[in-house]
Image 1 (cartoon, one colour):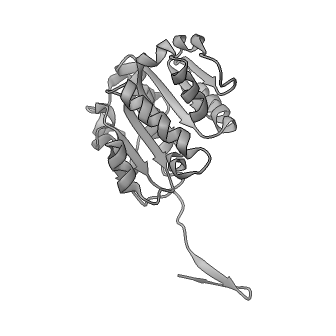
Image 2 (cartoon, one colour):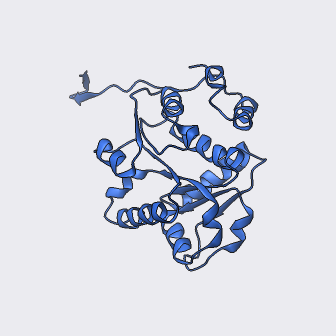
Image 3 (spheres, one colour):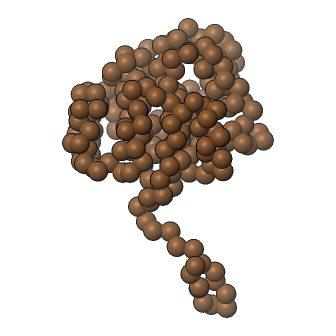
Length: 220
């Protein structure tokens, strides 16, 4: 789908960044997200295969919050290593934004983050920030949750569930964007989040399934 088709639905400053990065087409999940209200601050649950473009949906939500809604965006990932990776990539892709990484000391309010636009963190750290009553949280317009299927994880799931519940109570107008390639019950989760469900099977490389036996592969 051509990006030009959505020029009227994408805020000008966000559109300019897409042009600067050389995007001329959108992948199916990205187009569906825009049509479902990505730039109207609607909650979204994006459940599509790996490498189908989910991360850009999260980035667009963050850019909309910062450049159009004049607030902050929080990008939540499950691991500190992944947080560092995202921080490095986003800093490279969006040099005009103030991007911070916080995933260390869980018992800290990190008041310095008030000066940043996009904050990349883990669910445990964000939970700690909420419990410290961090003042800048009131300015958060969107929370993007990568690997949101971890709600079903015995270790991290309870923290993430409580975190999302608290955020939605504290910030009634908060936009939540969940991203995952592996959700067993997407309809149920979308209902819990009060979110539009974005599903698509498109992937950049075809996936074939088969059985290998005795040196031969039989594809289904």
